[in-house]
Length: 241
Ligand SMILES: NC(=O)c1ccc[n+]([C@@H]2O[C@H](COP(=O)([O-])OP(=O)(O)OC[C@H]3O[C@@H](n4cnc5c(N)ncnc54)[C@H](OP(=O)(O)O)[C@@H]3O)[C@@H](O)[C@H]2O)c1
Image 1 (cartoon, rainbow, N blue to C red):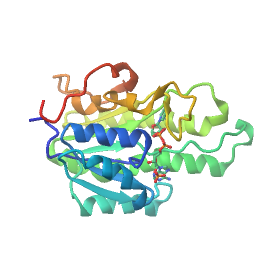
Image 2: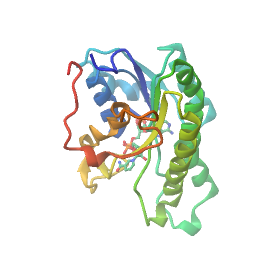
Image 3: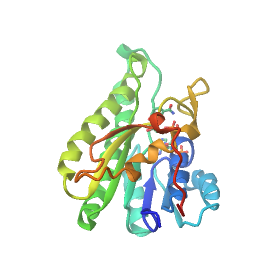
Image 4: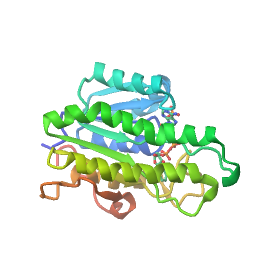
């Protein structure tokens, strides 16, 4: 039996794009999935795709751009299933493409709210119970974006996620809970656009490495960075493997 059978994962932004692939990959490993989008109807397509797997699913909605929306997601997951073992902080926004010197406070606040502040608040909501149970995985989506001053708010928010993850990992040492970052690579999604290097499906199985990778050392993959494209030729283990 795979170690993820019976576990519950919340994947933010799993209504489409990379989050949807992560949800499908987790389902292939036998993991139950809480699907998330800004609106409940946005989660419909992913929920339909998950019907192909013998797992339980639930959907939550909330705009991570507001504290109220973050609370809706937390309260929704706490109401059902009531236990989150794996949290993928995947949802993010890029913000407008703009000359760096004319980027507004409003843009920086919106981008940091979804990409960093929501990540921190969701982690704070679910990590304590993971620590108490002695098992948990928190995976923060980062980016390899570089030298694009026109997207500085997005880029800086991901740098902040990287730093936050490293500090969080120290807090989690020896708890059985690991936090890690995944860089999916430049992929064809609504955010990545049509000119991206690779199809969205190539994020698997790399994006699942933090939940598969035990490393047989006391800290496991805690604090590690996983470039998803490095693993794209690996075969994803199946539910019954
Ligand atoms: N695509 C790339 O090339 C690339 C490269 C590096 C890193 N990444 C990272 O990978 C992750 C996923 O990216 P993606 O390309 O799959 O993005 P995407 O196609 O734009 O999908 C974004 C997802 O996030 C949700 N979302 C957007 N704004 C939200 C908000 N305010 N509150 C709550 N949820 C919100 C969307 O939900 P709705 O459907 O409800 O709008 C959707 O499920 C992000 O962290 C991104 O930074 C992507």
